[in-house]
Amino acid sequence: MNRLFTKYSDQINGYLFVLPAFLIISLFGIFPVFFGMYMSVHKWKVFKGRFLGFENYQKILGDIGSFWIFILGLLMMISSYWVWSEFKNKFSNKLFCFIISFLILILSLFLINISWADMMEKGDEDFLNSLIYIFYYSFFAITTEVGLGLLIAFALYQKLKGKQLFQMILLFPYITPAVMGGAVFFIIFGKAENSILNEFIERVYVGLVPLAKKGGRFHHALIPCSSFSSF
Image (cartoon, rainbow, N blue to C red; front, side, top):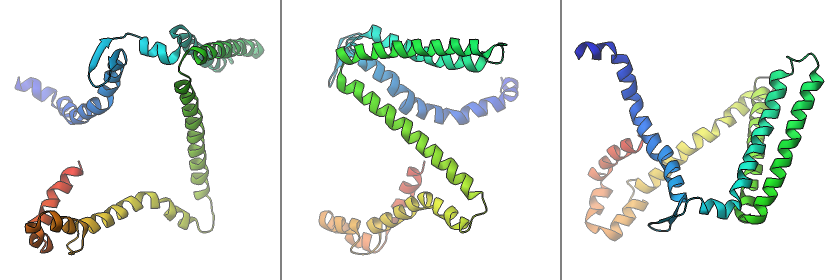
């Protein structure tokens, strides 16, 4: 047993170090997704009700078949790009590869159009419209942020006057929360008699005011609390 542990000690230590992060991600990231899927196939208000199957999906999507046709159209749209990028250099005549990928793209757009129209007609219009808004927001927000980030990064590596000033400004979003958090912490937990927490204690627990005003054990008790919250 000891020989086996010695042989695989590095692997075991690696898994042990990863285990806390895995448990946290599983509990707060993966589990809610699968539990939400489980709830979606039941009638659920405060407590679990009867099993509904795909009835909730039918209600918001209108037609499950149209939804799968819509997914098929998206996959065909991706495959049209894959056909062009993968086989354009393998054909002597690139026009033939372009025509095939273009036809796949046209067919995918046709399937997406008819399936989406059917879903809008039979499904929950508010939910489906929210998907459109999310798509527009995600597309423009990501492209704008990435584009501006690349532009600023490129500009800061050029020989520009005042470049150091702009580099310092870029650090403000990282510095400001820590400084403001420290200021708010000082205002709330400060030793001054008019600090927010001392005022609260004076109104609620009159007997603790001298301890808080003198900076006694009350402030020392904040140290382990702050250390624990950092984890």
